[in-house]
Length: 186
Length: 431
Image 1 (cartoon, rainbow over the protein chains, first blue to last red):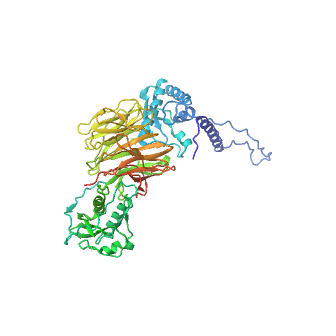
Image 2 (cartoon, chains in turn red, blue):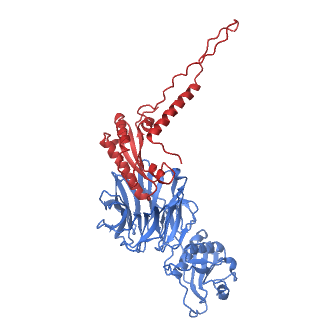
């Protein structure tokens, strides 16, 4: 079972990945050339100097891109069993989503409501719809125009955690904000 | 794959040339209601003629799976090569403790198969049933199912359910990579075929009770749709556009209406559409989840699932939405109500004690009985005789298989379909 990272961990993982990517990029840059004397003349052997490591190339997400949204804002909030109310721990993420969407007014999103498997199929479709709508209403209340937001429920059809048990269930009770258009691209 | 309805010629009952003596003892009778009934030992030798062994095999499997019959091992039979036109040597069947004997003969003529069979009470030494079915050779399974229904009905007094099909969702892949395809098969798991290609989620199909039509819900990222699909013509049409997600479709008993749910601004309610004029009426109007409607067989009432009391429960209202009243009061959450075709029961899924259960209750909510229990049982559908339910059983691994249970809860069997499946819906008896 792959643990699903929370937003803080996801951010840390992303930064580490960014740094690793920069080092990898360094390895492929052409080596700096050292000065040499013409072969005929006897010359002192060139001294190899240790060059200081180059500054890492910044590979942070482009502002306004989907990657920016997923990594720096967070695209998923979680719910209690059989509930659709926005939890206190979800509010900062939705506040950040709203602020980001206000900052990038061309972006449209689809809110996807999801449920754990401990319910039947149609009831869970309805519950997922409640969750998607709750996120929609929160974003609208925080300045995002409703016309930019569509909602859908996947019920229990699209779990992100394939495990069974309370931990997996918690991951699967969520609403996912998917960007459907208007984001900056690399 | 298009369903081809094929005609059966049904010849008048076969009678023996010699007089029937009055029975030496009471006729054998199979009681579907007794919880402690011993399956009736029945001998079903291979029928004579082409496909005879296959036909007898399908009949044996049907009757065994019902839990009410115990087909005896053909290796133990003493009399062989029976001709249904001749009385069997009953002593040789009593010897192996058979109480009933079913023998038959298949004849190929004019490009058709004619199957004659007789059902005998071994101890009373008397014929109970003699019939003949004729159809095209590729229809031999339906002949076997029709014979199964005739035997079942003669011995139990109840109508059979073997010449039927089941529409369902065929599942493959792990929990986070599930592929769902609409599929249809015979009730014994034979002849499965796919009706959609797996590129989008499909859910909760239902049969019409009086036409070769099914309805189902499709879910794509762009939104959901409910379709009507005619199995004979292959014609598929959307029920229409709605102000929100549309789901949970089912036909009224006369086939003229479809009940369904729409989730508008997060609030799910029950609607009914008249298929003739395509007008919809909203039947529930409160902020609770209202879904999973199911018509009573007389079309006058609808049972549905609502959490207006705070948790999901069962409610019955008039087919016009009048007088909704709660009928479930046990400890737990009740969903997926389905009204039996005989009107006698409402089956449902119940969650309690950390497990899922299939259960039945009377339409007034009384006499609740739990029939199954597991990690995740859900979504019962009634066989047309109102005696057997098919449902999906999902393991903690995410693998979902189809099972049947009878209304006493005593006979629990896996459906022979070997692959993953969910959301079964049982057809009426085929014509």
